[in-house]
Amino acid sequence: MADKKVITENRKARHDYHILEVFEAGIALKGTEVKSLRAHKVNLKDSFALVHNNEVILYKMHIGAYEQGNRFNHEPERERKLLLNKAEIRRLIGKTKETGMALIPLRAYFNDRGLAKIEMALAKGKKTYDKREDIAKRDANREIQRALRERQKL
Image 1 (cartoon, rainbow, N blue to C red):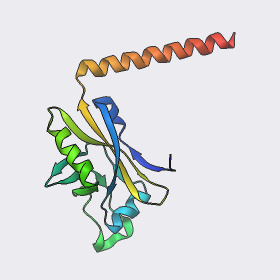
Image 2 (image 1 turned 135 degrees about the vertical axis):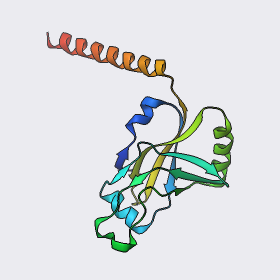
Image 3 (image 1 turned 45 degrees about the vertical axis):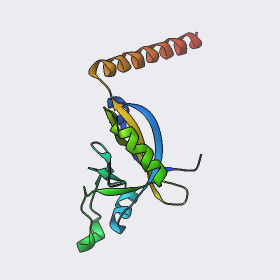
């Protein structure tokens, strides 16, 4: 896989959603936004994407203002267009029409050519009991690993 310089991750996404499919999308940015991304001033926490007029738009992705940007600075939570080909957009239109499906960003990164990319996921929301079940599984696995390490020490 190509070398990725991860800027930020949306850790809450894997807790709140069942990830069904992951894909990569470019993102249309302004100049000061790229500078802020390089300074890791980005937050994906509550962001999501919607398909509107055959375009995929990313909402609520916070990119902090660039200090040296003066009057050319960008709006921190503006809508940003995701760059996908027509076939991918058509497929996403069909998938997002299904009940409970959402497009959420998992991480933002620069690829090996220096282009800003967003790793998006087609996801379905988890219920509270699913979240508790995942936590219980993770705790059980942690206990098993701890017991195995202890056994190896003896």
